Image (cartoon, rainbow, N blue to C red):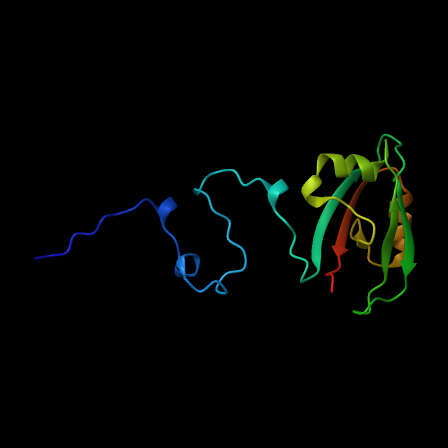
Length: 144
């Protein structure tokens, strides 16, 4: 007699690593049904590796940046960066970004590696001082 199989919707299927009894098989598992909206506010950035993200700050209205930096001529990878030493609260471009984007919050200790596509320190600083849309690429270094 042929064995009957019960078909399950794709959203209920799990891969072997998700159902393994070996607790070391998977570090983090996010449960839910496919198609559900993923709440990024609940995600935690794993701190074992560097985390790169982008931020788009709007300075077209004349709002100050509100981000204080120190220049790092060469980091461990040989790249020049701007290390964020502090952020001002209130009506500043950095604070406005953080309030609207908590999952990609800019923090003290983050590194600006690019400003509007510019990677050289002098050009990054020049971009940060202008009154326009500022697209930043930032890196949060792994702890450890």
